[in-house]
Amino acid sequence: MSETAMPPVVPAAEWERARAELLVAEKEATRAEDRLAAQRRRLPMVEFGEYTFAGPDGPVTLRELFGDRRQLALYQFMHSGPDHFCPGCTYFTKNVTNLAGLARNDIAWATVSDMPLDQMAGYWKQMGWEHIPFASSAGTTFAADCGAGGGFLLNMFFRDGDTVYRTYSTGQRGVDRLLFSTLVSDLAPYGRQEDWEDSPEGWPQEPTYG
Figure 1: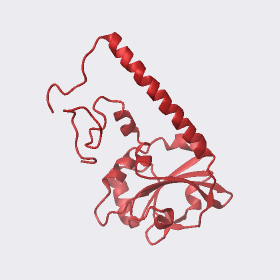
Figure 2: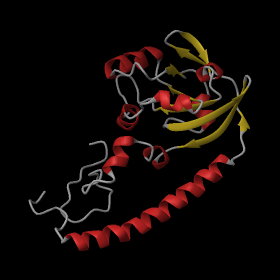
Figure 3: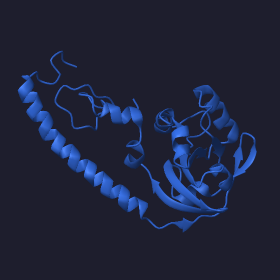
């Protein structure tokens, strides 16, 4: 990176004008996000089959992952083979915090993966993720039935009594936009510093997850 690769320095009045111009675009994007959220809340739902996963305390069903909550956010962590762990899923899981805040909105959180349970348990311990409930979906058709296949996916579920429904799913950039460290980085001058970003010449950039 060149020593001069940084935003230009301008007088305060010029900065205020540029910031005000950007604010107009930001407010337009916020209103568009609000409209999407409203549309999302009006999605229908589909009844989803029952699945039994391997949990650290024994078998656990999809219904049981809700606990006493009516809504469940369930992340499918990619299985990359023995002794290998998806860097993107690892980065995502590092950003999973404040589950108590979700609980106050009647939402439970859990992570499942087609990794064997022992592999998941070892990684959770290594990463210090004691606060994140997990279970192995290995040997089930859950990932395939969700459309995750061998990839990653975030699903939202709702329950009425003991009947479980799928209400929403998102992957790729839809998952990416949920991350605290990513969103804060998007506000910084250098952004995420990833090579796909549209940044000025000379900005520091590296491959994603590099």
